[in-house]
Length: 613
Ligand code: M6R
Image 1: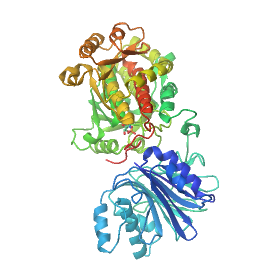
Image 2: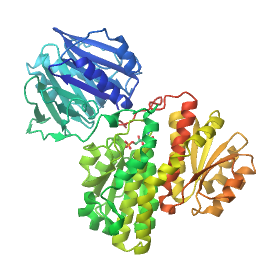
Image 3: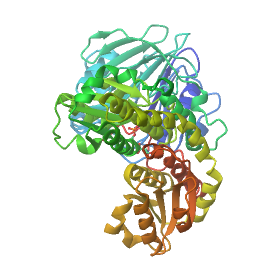
Image 4: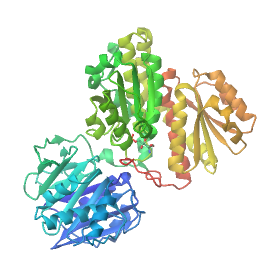
């Protein structure tokens, strides 16, 4: 959940660490800190708040050639300066940064307390560095050996980086359950990061650490990697496919707005080389070898969290409509603890932008144990879910930095559409004529999203009128019901306004009691989606003086006449409308949040990648 960066090289660690933290700040922003090996000591600077606050505290000209840094999303202990990372060992000679949770930290702490250790923070991480030093000092082992021995006793998830004032030219890093990437620059410098973003300015040659690995980095020498049980690993370096521009705002006031506007391109990239309307084909190389398995499966289970769970719900409609395969959609957090009935006849699809969400990953691991085939739909290349599934399809949406997921969602839905269509064509459950029509329309979607984006100004005006509302209701039917859920999630997470998504017809079973003249109701009312029924739902709201903001198909007159505000989206096949209807809801949430002065890219209490339960 936190972000960690490390630098060991010939240059100055400080700018590398600060820039790296800025790139990782989406992972958590409760506090930030760094530790440098300066002279013969460790110098730690840390603070509650954001990386910019930490940067402002650093004296000009600060320099060191070894350092580690951290941006925190608090788990153990409140977000204050004492609990901020890095944490020091009792002697002050070792420092650690950590992303993850040490589940047995209480047991270790008890053991150390009995030996007289005194802890300053409430964190599990401080316990770990005390434990490492305890082994380091008592067993005459080297630093990497001491870290390795300590980690063998640790239960939980971690990516860690440890430095020592006694060995200034070294760093020990390890991972289990939380991601860690090591970049190797042309001059031999090492840059370590929770993801590749802090590395990209310095090198494109990286090693994605595997589970249960520990790496010993020494200035001027090749990295040494071993497993926690001490088997040597020869690290396979890969070339990063990531540009600096993709990590910059490029003139947009927020990453979220940039990412909303990137959707014509990101949706196109998700389809590139896969949708071949000219040939009447959909080609999904990543899962080709498993297509028969999918066709013979008794059901598909989609597992995800948050927005990715919503994409799974859209997938359910697509797969059932086009491929006639039964689908269940599960929250990772529920699925993993429910003792679900899964067997070799099942296919479990993990959907995740980051590919690191702990609950989704745990659900997938459980399904693997029970013999299911695992497929992944991930955005981040080389992420844990991408690596632990049998096969999968990358969404290719490009880096998503805003905490609120936007382009990742539409890319996930695009990939699910392609999968459903491909399976439907193989199975013969979608006629050739419909398949061809769908392919043509899908090919048009990037252009249609461009058109939707032209409503931005109108949406901004609507946002201004409703930004003081205390509650919002979002309604949709059929395949646009999950879009209503997604619209509500977007609004609440970045504006802090309470919002609920509902299937429109469910309104009369409870939520209708909430409707009065102060309740804005966003209704997705595209032409083919149970249109008459939605019209009735809108009338029910109007009869109670609710305010209607409708998303309608271009040319609509009936819903428009009933609505207080209308946003048109181009006409397309109903199965493809989520790709269009989502966009105005993203913009509405964005403008309301900006109008309220919220920190749109870093909403309170949230982090982009949730690597804890
Ligand atoms: O990386 P993932 O897609 O697995 O993340 C899942 C959720 O944490 C994520 O979608 C979250 O709900 C977003 N903040 C929604 O905008």
